[in-house]
Amino acid sequence: QVQFVESGGGLVQPGGSLRLSCAASGSIFNNNAMGWYRRAPGKQYELVAGISVGGRENYADTVKGRSTISRDNAKNTVYLQMNSLKPEDTAVYYCSAGPNLATLNRYWGQGTQVTVSS
Image: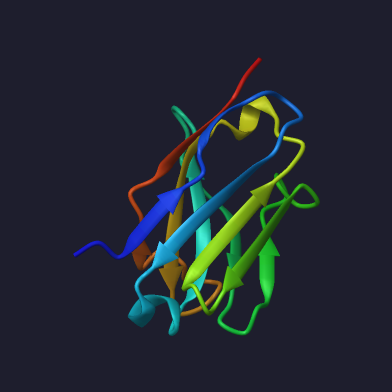
């Protein structure tokens, strides 16, 4: 049973922007905080951003000020807008969900590749 459908990854030049989307099943979306993790080659998973059911947001220091997470409750979709992208943002980005902002790793999407390169 597919619980997440991610889209929006791709190749972008340094300084560019991307918006990642993740459509989730209603049973997960309506009852969980949503987030985005990433994993760069050879590195561990990093929690990039999270948003609670009530709309409270938090961000990793590495993306703070350059990224915005949002959720559309009517569409059961969470977004990650990333601006001023850097080569070090290159990673597979995973949509995730969990009961609160401190526990966003209960449910996972399949991942979408983001490559920042000239």
